[in-house]
Length: 354
View 1 (cartoon, rainbow, N blue to C red):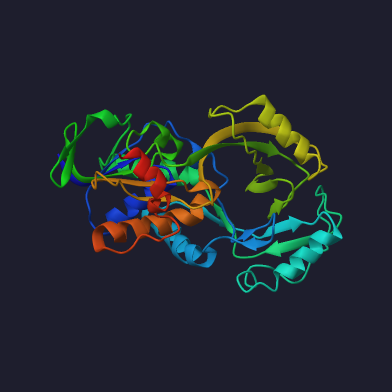
View 2 (cartoon, rainbow, N blue to C red; view 1 turned 90 degrees about the vertical axis):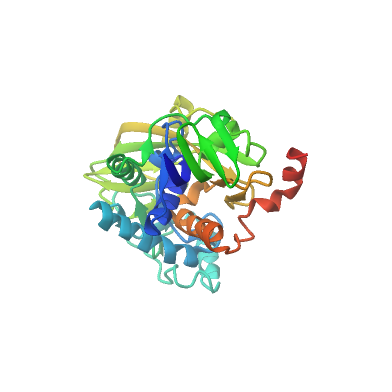
């Protein structure tokens, strides 16, 4: 069997790159073993503002201009609904919080996203003593539905194999690679934190941040916006809400923990004051990089091997843009954006390729 590309991993990164290939009629085979779950359990929120500091997300405008049409195209292609539009309401904790909001309004990159009129309305069950600030141009991609539907689509197209990829089985040929019974021009690794077991890219500085979420049922809450406070409360419909998220830099498992649940429950006491029941708990490992920039590039010795990884907490916004940039680099010679190119870690590359 001969294909143009092998893609290892079908989270948001692998999916976005597969779509680029499909759009340009490149052939490919995906390997997915369900070992990484961050895309399946992610909140999936797209938001151009870092609300902790009221600063713009890196390249937010450009990313949204690519991402939103990308997900609309997939909705039409797979006949699914995955993009839920809503307003994010930031619950202010103090007058200082409010003042910081108004200062942020003067920043050119934020003016289109922050509402200058504070929301002073009271919402049943929501704790907000100093009103709310509205963030516009926001919403949520149902990443679980997206990834599962796309996997089913690839399965019907016979373009995916649900098995563990064995790096030691790669055999290098001139201008190509052989992997078992597949010959490909290139392999693109989109393995999430599984890259730590990849002998070709394990030296890259990828950090694993475990995140846990709760799904709760709160009959009396009844909000149709994403509430952002010490954590987020995301409406799912039928009085169900996703609540998150934790950051754990030491636990490297994808198993929900009692500690994670207790942390979320404790924080939730400061956000809502109506009864609720916990319906479920989920966990995943976010692949993050210092500086919050992805890892994109070609192996320094084996030009057939490529990495697309480290999307972090804003994968739904970043994935379509970096996948397009990588495709255009490989097929059209376009430069990889400096901020994401793995060559920014040249000292590590040199150390590990001597």
